[in-house]
Image (tube, rainbow, N blue to C red; front, side, top):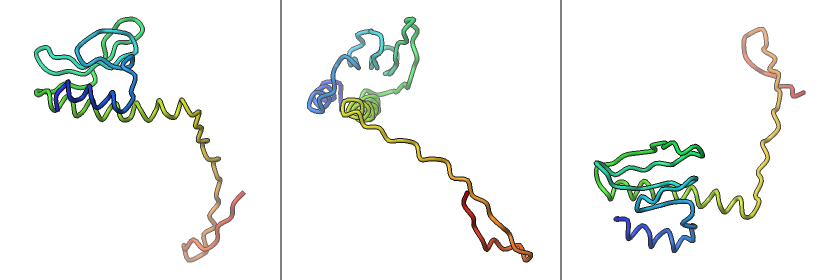
Length: 110
């Protein structure tokens, strides 16, 4: 896969292009794919500093990795859009009573 093919796929997935750049356009809160001495994927923080995520020798490898990142990003966007909240299950305290033989034979919940 190359960047042009990736662009078409991401558009079909309805991922807003404000969250990524395939041709090195810089911007805050973006995941950027660009070619320099190597194919690299990075992001830019709010202070303008770069955070390298991954680097690759071929465009195809970089695009595959980027595509997998965008699938996760799309999942996150969909959860935010539909306000899906999955609560953390409550912590359950368990007491195990061990018999004289060393076997655990009774379990008691608080």
